[in-house]
Length: 157
Image (cartoon, rainbow, N blue to C red; front, side, top):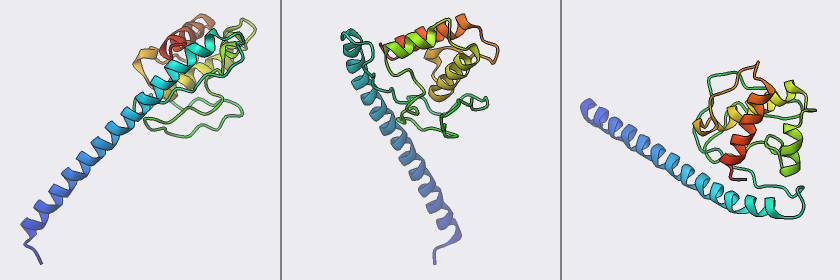
């Protein structure tokens, strides 16, 4: 059996190797997520110019690790996980599916509580500073609609 100091040194080397592998794994996940984002960014503008505003957009993968330090917002009939990794796609109904759905969500007829929860859930999922600061539970309709315009820019719709 090896000397205790040798075993400690080997254990430290294994920890360093594991940390490097985790870093490489995170970099690979980011590269894959950016590739999927690029594909969606090429696809989505084409859908927007088509005659029908009911053609579905590609979902955009998560690019930033972690989530805001706030409670996970609850959307009725949507099963959100407690955490998502880089490259994960949002739940199917989290983002508006197409131009018609964006228009309906921004509509003055949309229930403000539902609008807030939807916007906060999108912000929670992506956790990307490019989308602006996390809106609070008392966000106004204008705050929410401004976020949706930012989101459209974010995914290059």
